[in-house]
Image 1 (cartoon, helix red, strand yellow):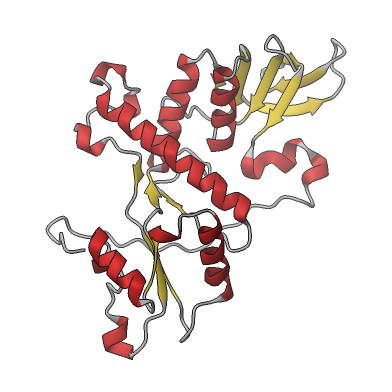
Image 2 (cartoon, one colour):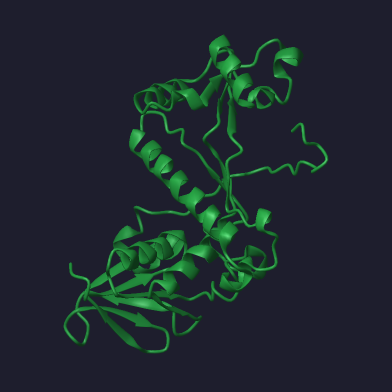
Length: 284
């Protein structure tokens, strides 16, 4: 591929817009993102009706993947980028921000919050997944950021680094006589919809074109041989888009565009409970 190639990206969610951003930053000058939702004007906000897995209030960012060390490495790399974006937002003037990120004090602009994550076992021993994760953390030389509640050395290190208060917030050891858990101080959460808003803003600044419209941006078909002989995307307004490369990042809608994926991809969901801790409880 060359930088002059036409690239079409179907979907402006996390995968689509991040792909567009990094293509632009590595020299590809003709990338266009199509989406049937106006994610820009609504700032990806699910409370404004944006329907996408990316358009969530927040997402957990974990580094723990058991034997799958490649995901652990990707997460570790991503934390460096999240910290960089936090700094950019902190230093930006109000006028430099997209609409969805305006009106917040600088201390409240952060996308990524490194608050740690405590994974508690329901048994008297840690599960194999956590054991494998700790082994891989050791391989990557980041084991010092993990704290086992049954390891006195880890507990002392947590105390010295200010993480001890999060080792047993539910007082399980006192209440039940056992508390097997691992506190990972590298993990945390991010504001998902705000993150997509910032990524879209950066992509547009880098030269990415976007068509975010229920008709003009709604892809109805993809064909390897369009009227002009190349790859083609067709939108609901009847337009044919020719491209050298088509990237489909449609999430749960992908099988409706790539029929071969119908038996391979499915949308899943799971229950998530969130407890908002009052600001006056600084001990938590």
